[in-house]
Amino acid sequence: MNKERGRFGSQLGVVLASAGSAVGLGNIWRFPTEVGKGGGAAFILIYLSFIFLLAMPVMLSEFIIGRSARSNAISAFQKLAPGKPWVVTGMMGVLGGFLVLSFYSVVAGWTLHYVIVSGLGQLHIQGGADFGQAFAAFVSHPWRPILYLAIFLLLTHLVVVGGIHHGIERYSKLMMPLLFVIIIVLVGFSLAMPGAAEGIRFLLRPDLSKLTPDVVLSAMGQAFFSLSVGIGCLVTYASYFSQETRLVKSAMNVCVIDTLVAVLSGFIIFPTVFSIGIAPDAGPGLVFITLPNVFALTFGQMPFLGYVFSLLFYVLLLLAALTSSISMHEICTAFISEHFSTSRRKATVIVTAICLVLGSFCSLSFGPWKDVTLLGRGFFDLFDFTVTKFLMPLGGLLMTLFVGWYLDRQLVEQQLTNNGSVPVRLMRPLLFLIRWVVPIGILAIFLNEILPLFIP
Ligand code: PFF
Image (tube, rainbow, N blue to C red; front, side):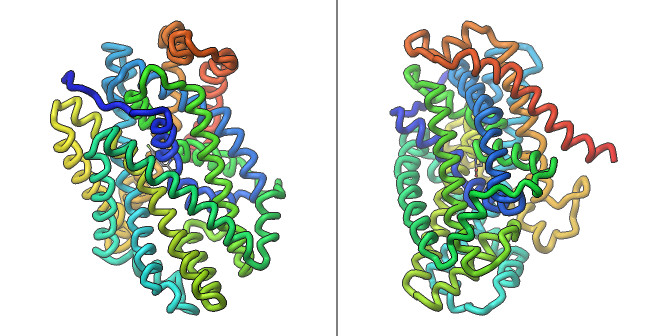
């Protein structure tokens, strides 16, 4: 049980790995979709306040729990609160880890397919073709998307099996800078599109009429999902932080990087979409249906640019998905290897195998199993709903209550100040957020969203 645990080797590694977990499909695929539906800048404003007032304090709480316990998400609660029911929070986290990796890898598999298709130039020959139909035919195919899902899970597996320092940290340090470079290049491309100004206006001018209570709820879900908080992912990562890692500074850095990438993704997608006059609220098909239309059109006018633009975009999406999926995998791998005292290699295989089976269920729910439902939902929807609408907010609530009200105040302050060696000027406001603002905020929003589902 007491095997040598992995460690992140540097502060840069900590920030890049945590930011890698945060930056993912949530930023580049989900965020623009939500912005499109939520009235552009109006949604962004609410989202930003939720990032810093709700999700960031949850992240900090996870860091505190993880670094003081130095174990996986479940044992962390057993160590800090022996014999108490708090351990349920950790169990929800590990369950969330399995579910999120399973449905996330399905979309990541689609992305891999689009990397290959655009790399082969097939996205362009189809100019004038119906990309909506091509997408629907692909995702509903009985085995093709499962093949891509399996390849993606294998890539995730290969990083995680390398361990914390030589696997996760090493690849995050490689992939994250590459990701930033691609984003900058793509923003440049996008802003040069004719008609880009309209997209920028949409992003910067709030349309308050679109702000319904439902949009407010989606903004909270999006903030939690985007920062990977609420299911013990960051408890697990923080268990590998060194004593010198500054928790508040790291959390702020991750929030700023994640938000920046989300907003820049908006700057890639909306000017592009507006330049060919498509409505911005296309929903989840935005990057798989709307964008291929744009790429094909660009290709028709400037073949080289169109080719590079599309290929880089899907490579970006794939890299972002991979740096996130490894963190989901790690929640489960850390638990299995420590709890059952198995080798990391074996634990990694077990997690990959379970997620391959669960992920296949999710994938099939777009095709042959379209009509198979559990609690009224297909597998993909059910997993997505359980994680983003239920486990994440509830986990965030429990973790802030745990840190704010149960853990010894001195321990919390020691963690935040690295045993008094770094001053934390915002200590009081941060603790106030953790003790009051987050629990009340989540509870209010959560009840608003969940109760009506059960009490019609
Ligand atoms: N934050 C990731 C994204 O925005 O794509 C998703 C995610 C990663 C959720 C890790 C949960 C998690 F544990």
